[in-house]
Amino acid sequence: MKPSSDPSTAPAPLVIESSVVDGLPAEEALLLRISGSLDTAGAHAWAAALRGHLEEADRAGLRPVLDMAHVQLGGAAVLHTLSETTRSRTGRPDLIIVRARPGVREAVHLARLDGVRLYATLDEALRELARAAARVEDLPAWRSQMADPLRPSYDDLRKEVRALRARVRTAPVIGMAQGVLMVRYGLPDSGSAFRALCEASQRFNVPLRVLVSAVVVARPPDGELWFPGRRPLPVPPLRILARADRDPRYRGRMIDAVLHEALALGRAPAGYVRLVDPAGNALMLENHRGCADPFLDHLVRGRDEDTADAVARLRGRRVCVPDVADGALLSEECRRVLLTSGTRALQSIPVLSSAGSCTGVITLHWPDAGHRPTDGEAETLGVLAADTAAWLSWYHRTVLLDALEHLHRTVTAST
Image (tube, rainbow, N blue to C red; front, side):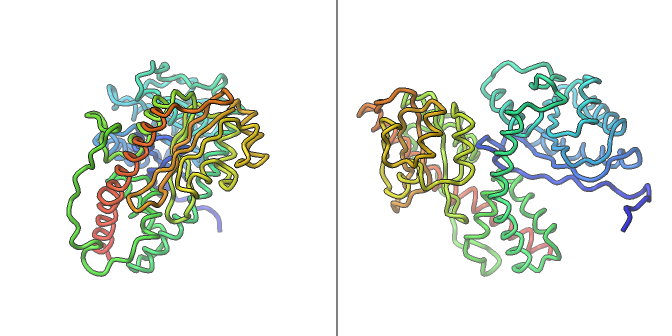
């Protein structure tokens, strides 16, 4: 079948997806994945739809990020639309564009549009958001962080591959959740289910992969309410994570705080946080700092059985490897990757629920063999792990269940 030549044909709709990508806080960004052909005839409708989504981002206090990897055509139409859009956004957060095709990248770069930033990958853009949140000086609005904005570096491509691997692990669960909603509510197609999931994800700032996992594993609703008799729960007392500027409803920011505190308490230059995904019963990388790319690639490939994280999760207690070169718990490949990355000692602290099950692991890396946290540091890291478990339980029983309840209510009302 030939593509329609009717100029009134509307471009493909914008799809909003909130998700954690490579361990960075997606709650701070509104991701607009754009697909289809964009020409002069469709530019007006596309601009109107884009403005609506950008206004939604501004109301929610989110940074808009446009993923234009699948925009087939563009050129002058894209440039004109972006120019008009950014002109109306003076004084508001810059518009971030990722993965744009060469023609779009070149036009935007040469035009030096005020209020637009170009990035090769989504990982690079979100990392910049994290830096901005830490009040690191921004680059000029029109500049890309790439040495050559028209040709991604090897590191850019490697990080993009890692992000794609993470999405591949999530995609089957999204499909399962779509199927659950279609069967449960009689939805006509998977697109309707996906839009309902995205809307609930965005409204409650729950990453999409977290929401779909909950849809898959939660018991089915049996009535008007999914969780009847549920009462609001107060935020648990937190001894380390409690701070006036930390809102426990924002998952990504809290996980970032966990990692920040762990690195400071353990005086470690590198570390990461992984939490258990209940649908896949696997550890998922949530946030990291200071870790070398080869080791992150090793984690994202899903080889959990040979890491200290996996052992800490299985045993339910702290695992200390003072010398990676002699670490009997590690596989040969894991040991090689760690040593190549400059890690000579590490420790993994399990995050245990009140029932004793492991819901995540905090891991710290040091460059010196023989390093062990002091008794005082180990005790304080244990308190941090307990704080993390208490907060995570509260989040699942309040924010996540609120999102599920809203999803049930809105989809029921629409069918």
